[in-house]
Image (cartoon, rainbow, N blue to C red; front, side, top):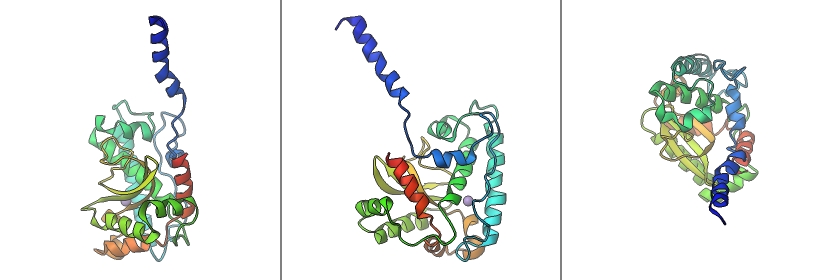
Length: 241
Ligand code: MN
């Protein structure tokens, strides 16, 4: 091969791989906060069910304050934090994978917006029980049994010191349980373990204190009665494809 041909073929490799869109399986979640246009401000997505839909496990007042006050504040502060950073108009995915390059307020409030928008969708009225379908098989393959997964996830949620989240992620095709501090998530370049999240629980005190006070383990146990496994299955399949 002559030199010109060689340079041409080598330089074509990244171009070709760039043309193939990389599916992260997050399109559904990321579109929850879809803006009217690229440069529009982020908006608070409505709760996908009634405030009392998750009773008696997560109470109405907690849901009202959590969505209308906490989540709303993250949206307002994220829009403010983005001003002048050059990140206006960028997607969550683009922002998170370079989040270490932006001010801390972008990371904290962007995570706050995304994590909560996501959190609402993986719960539902009359949810819970044991999952069926592909995610159930994957849980068995990765953790041994549903009980072992539940125990691992609950431990991650109850032992996360201070405020944060516990996650079930797809990492290189395998399921993994992790936890993150503050409003961090496994899509951020700062995350210790990165992956595509398919289930998460908010363990900030504002998520449970009104009903459970200091009893975080009881809140985590009851979270298993509201999980929307249909949604988790969809996310798992998308993440695997
Ligand atoms: Mn929260």
